[in-house]
Length: 313
Image (cartoon, rainbow, N blue to C red; front, side, top):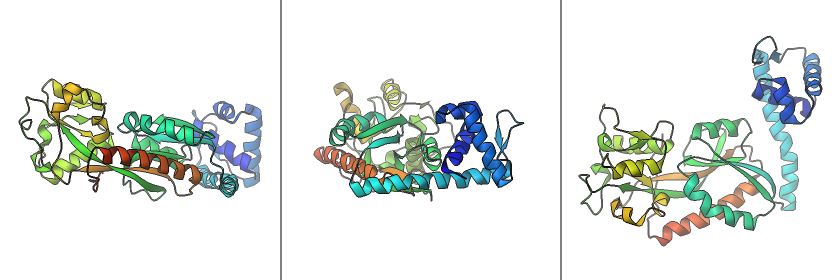
C-alpha cells in the first residue's frame, strides 16, 4: 500500500470516473486503474462498484476513503514540518471566502499580503459556508474566511474581527427619521434579506427573532447580493442590514440612508477557519496577521465599536 495509491483512490471517489481522476492526477488512466486494482487485490476487497454509472464506493470503500483522506493529509505534514522548521512561508494555498465578505475584504488585504509574502501562491474562490465546510473536511481547501462560530469539531477558528451591522433605511421607511435605531425597532416583515443559504441572512433572522419581531408571513423579497438589496431598498421596498465594511464604499447620495445602531450594535464574528490538522499553519498565521491588522485599523479609524457577535445559526 502506498500514499500514491491512496491519492488515486481519493481522486476517483471525488470524480466518480477513472478517466477524470487520471487527468486530475496527471497520469494515464491505465496507470491509475492498475494501481487501484493492485490496492484492492492486496486488501482483498472492492473499493469501487464499477458496474454503476457514475462509479460508486462500496460500503467498505466508504470507510477506506475516510481513512485514506486522513493518511494522505498526514503525509503532507512531513513537508509542512520541514517548511515550518525553515521558516518558509510559500507554496500554493487554497482559500475560500463567503460571498458577503469577499467583495469588501479581499481588496483590503490581498495586495498587502502578496507584497509581504511573495512566495505564497493564493488560489481564492468564492463559496458558501456549506461548500467551505465540505471542502475543508475533504482536504480541497487549506483555509477559508467565514462568519462564525460554526461549531464543527473538524474545523478550527481564529477570529479576525467583529463586524458591526448598519441599517440601510430609505426615506419612505418608518424608521428613516431616527438618527440611531435599536435592535428592538426591527421587524422582519419589512426587511429585505439575502436569499436562503447565506449565513448573513441567518444572522439577521436570528436577530429579529431574539426580539420577537418575526411573523409567519413570507418575506417580501430575497436577493442574492447585498448590492441588489440596496437598490430594492431605494425603490421603497423595505429596509435592510449591511455588514459595516460594505458601507465604506457606498455612494455619497446613499449615505443619508445609513443608520447606526445604539451601542452596543449587533455584529457578526468573522474568522479564518481551517482543518484541525493545522497543515500550512505558518501561512494561516501570516494571513491572520495581515487581515486582522488592516481590518481592525479600518474599523477603529471610523470610531466603530468592536463588540460581541450575534449567533449566525
